[in-house]
Amino acid sequence: MGRISDKLLLATLPVEGFVFFGTIMGWPSLVEVLKALQVFESSCDPLSNSTTITSSGIINCSKRDSFFSAAGTIGSFSMNVSVLLMGFLIEKLGIFKARALLTIVVTLGLVCFLFTPQVNWLVFPAVFFYSCGNYSFVLTNSMMSVLFPKIGALVLVIGQGLFQAGSSYFRILAIAFDNAEIVDEKVVEKRGNVKEHYLDVNYILMVVWIVLLNMNVLNCIFTWNSYARLVAGDNYKQHVDDFGAYAWTAAFFAMLCGFVSDGFAKCIKSRPLKFGKLLGVWIFIILNLLVGIVFGFLQLSFDEKMRLPLIFVYNIYRSWGYTLTPVFCRFLFPEEFYGILIGIQRFFLGITSLSILGLQEIPSTFGKEGFTGIFYTFIALQGVMIIFPVVFGKRLFKFR
Image (cartoon, rainbow, N blue to C red):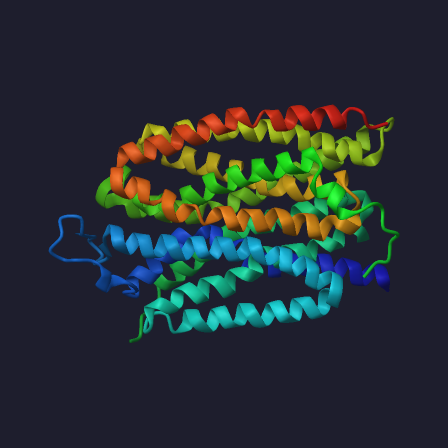
């Protein structure tokens, strides 16, 4: 019966995952829905030269974009920082009670969303509370990897894949909106202290790497509407629609990481099981850095014809980055510290994501030159971060 219940848990994961995991990453699609509902429309000055009106009647201006960018940044901050708290709650209360509390918080966020068209400022607490569940639900489901040791990396990656696929959820809601009529626990012996693991140079480099990747991704997400208008003018809506419509493809790219890691583990019999899984992680970290550089140069093209290549490269870039970190933490460090290590990493993602509030002001002020400076900076940082796989590789190939 135990094995049946384990399989049932795994079978229900996709349903919860698509609806709740990673939805904030599809924020641009929901922004257009909120604009259609006239949220923050009054912030635009109709007499200003910077205010534009689309053929569908959507009013756009920099100030309105700033409000939505701020709300999305708050959501990213909440999604990441809440994971650390969730890690401690799971340790103290157990998964069931921790998830129950999280469900209440997410429900509060949904209620705030319900009244946002009438009270626009409610979008900020709505995004904050709703986003608390995005990655925290992933964390609770990641615990299932211990139930399936032979495919442990794949189980972890399934959760990450659903986190990526959840980015398309807001796009589905946007399609439904456009076509709708609008009426006014396991006990283990502790091995070492968690401090020695979060001070490990490999862990620190991993956090720096994923923080830079996260800032790059969030900058793309929360300035995509502005970037699309710069590239495509009045036809920018197609860019926004495609951004949300193809977000789900990241799930397939994420799954590739799991299959490769578990495949190496099965093929390499002369080394420990975790060596094969971490070898896959090491390879994909190198590939991710290269993809990140390609991503930056595609952005610098400012070419409307490169819309779909840019979107697909973006999905590869983010899916591999967010997918690799849990496998890295799960198999490089003792499993009893997994929740706290993931929580610390997500805490830093949340704190540093606040920088997007200032970062998105650069293109708002300097236009194309602002975007260009940001893109070149992230390209350079991708090159610098090659130090991460170099250091990690030295430790990896010492495994016997």
